[in-house]
Amino acid sequence: MKKLSEYLFLWALGGCIYYGFEVLFRGFSHWTMFVLGGICLIFFTIQGKMVHWEEPLWRQILRCVIFVTSMEFITGIVVNKWLHMNVWDYSRLPFQIFGQVCLQFAVIFSGLCAVGILLSGYLLYWLYGEEKPRYHVL
Image 1 (cartoon, rainbow, N blue to C red):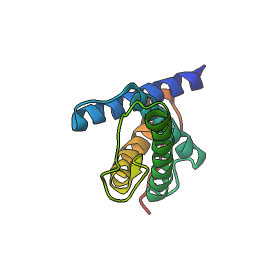
Image 2: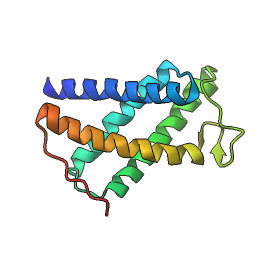
Image 3: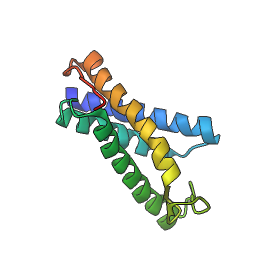
């Protein structure tokens, strides 16, 4: 039950953070971004716990950016291409793939990933008594 509580909390928090980030910077968002943000924060947590929060932060960020970008691509194909919901379109930006992901946003996501990794590790420690994160850059 504790694990379910942890993951539901992290999913809701990740959804709120990402949805709020989009509203702040784009002026609007979509419910699918809430779902995606929650999934991503859970991934940040799982990958951090797997390495006991000891792997260099740059490696954790790289792993999470690859995950987030992959999930954005998959979500974009389903939501934008198959279901024609037209939530976003990066086709006018350079270094994009099918208008669903682009290099600029992958770089922006790296900052969000860093925040998510740090936040998830410390929240689990403070709220659920999990092991204390021991982050280091190199």
